[in-house]
Length: 220
Image 1 (cartoon, rainbow, N blue to C red):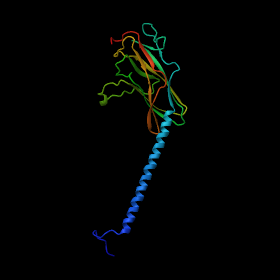
Image 2 (image 1 turned 45 degrees about the vertical axis):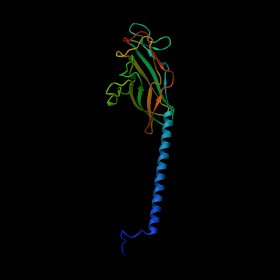
Image 3 (image 1 turned 30 degrees about the vertical axis):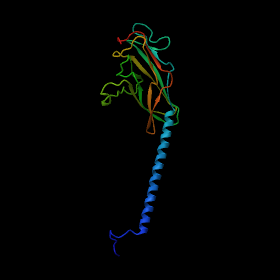
Image 4 (image 1 turned 180 degrees about the horizontal axis):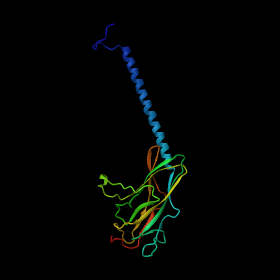
């Protein structure tokens, strides 16, 4: 049987078969892409719903502070923490999973009260604290200490489970607060929540947590 040379035309029947194969392959690829997209969309929707069932709240007491070293009350009659040397306050936090699937808790963030803050209030720890404080620094911010407080929770929260802890606040000796200055921690703390490997941030509900400076702290 003679072999076909490269100069001979391709028979029409071979060309038609080739086109059919290309069409079938294209249809198969499109089907796979659509199925993969639908699967990811379903996974993302499930994960988003699971995260939405995580509630972060404060209380039952919103903020408790020890008396200052001079004997004056640590909070105002309106419930604001008094900023000053020796200040020590506790903010009770509750994280509850109201959903039907477990979720993973990552970092707890409190913007504006980290080790690099210029203000007179700093979040210094959790009680109980499952992990040592983890600070974010590096080339992105020149290696400087960040203005946010960052704590690692790193645990799984089962359906119906509640995690309770206190955020501890102290006076920041390197920061300042002019007399009459008020700090309201709005939308804080924030918690990274992951489900099926997909993450998002949940924020505390409720009014801002108030701090108030009765005197000029550190000569602002």
